[in-house]
Image (cartoon, rainbow, N blue to C red; front, side, top):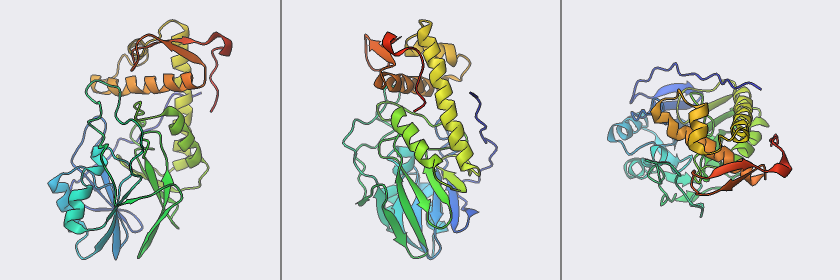
Length: 311
């Protein structure tokens, strides 16, 4: 089982410029680079006469100005939000105030939001975000010149949506699948079980291209999805091996598996380890004792053995 994923981090960005990336699709990258956003949040403009804005990005005046310039002479019919993380949704209402358009997203989930991590908490989530029009898996968003199917793909976030451009075998994947890095699964916001289930759904499709929320286009969608799944199963096995050897808390596992990782990314690594351990616990493969919220000690459940299922 391979541990390697081929990421494409070779990208030049001209912030504020609408770049043609596909038939009827343009991309503007917000100037909010960082360890979790790569070069910035991708905002996509879909359509010609009428336009859907997918992920308006942060509430950054320069970025909103760029979207306004790029859509001059066109009607913005919809503002679509893949999920209510602030780097994707904070610009929705300010953009609507400028250009109009119906804000469309999954809507409130009724679940606990945020992440168990120092410095994160719920600050990266807008738990109060409410769209004008909540949508669900299987819905379709139509306007003159485009139609998008709604795919509910929880895992990174409970409200995460992808949007499939009908007739083009093109999917806007938000943070569910990214070409520049693995997706952060941050409990309780994120669920490894949901994430792998959503990946399995994508693997059954026959798409030609993914446009992610960060980084460049993904030209081999099914291969990348399968690689994501293989990587997660491999990571699960390495974590189980740690627990079996008595390296059985999140900090100690991170030190063992991610010792050379940049400090900025170790929080994400700890969240990933916790998400895997929670998924193992759900399936009865490990048990947890002691403190909660990532500080528990984990042990193999003797009756289950040390093997992980392939689900």
